[in-house]
Figure 1 (cartoon, rainbow, N blue to C red):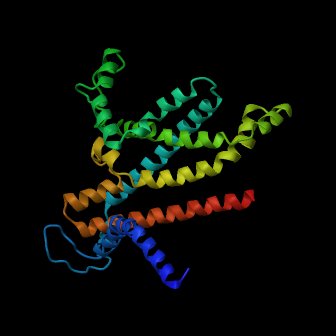
Figure 2: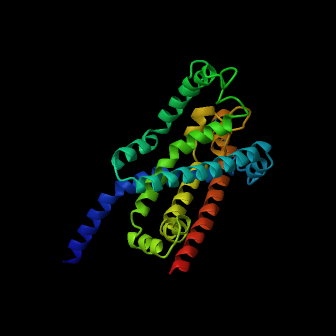
Figure 3: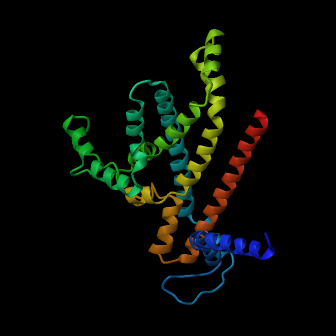
Length: 297
């Protein structure tokens, strides 16, 4: 192949890749760079003048009690959601792995929550939990379990438990499917040998099942933790961050600051701090996975 032909092939490849690269730049790099730039300015949606303010936005955010409340809510929301999704998904995967009949039907039924968009899930549950015409509050009242209809999405005593239950129900199928796929790779001969040697069910799980699926579980926990911590639409559509900020996470706080108060510079500082925290969390988590790989090797 001549040098001219090579240049032609190279140019053709660049032209094919260029649209995808352009989309990535527009949808990923530009928002990130613009947020970082705006975080050092007093950018306001109603004022055309923009001035450089240094780290004043970061100082103001870190001194805000609302920021730390949103951070605590984000941590609770993420840790409790991931723990619940992992537990439910793991149990469902083990159960499906042992079922011998109608496995396809059960898999389809259990994965239904994950198949719907967050907006459908949110509005569906808002209808079910509505304290006036909702199915569940009226059912509990008619059964005599509650004296009156409970406002699940506005009662401070139960709102966090309610949204956590919805998020666990919504995200557990992802854990189930991936853990089930990992369970299918475990050699049956190891279980048979362990049974012959007198190992009980817990020992087979701890020394055979868990080592084979822990990498998959670890990767799922990392990716889902980042996603849930950074998630906006489900919680915002369910409660809007209320009541009284009890379900206001950092993404919702940033949205209210940027689009509610029009303070785009301060909102950008919040998102930059969120990005730095998630990068640190991801780096530590992947370092732990790397240690697992080296230990197993």
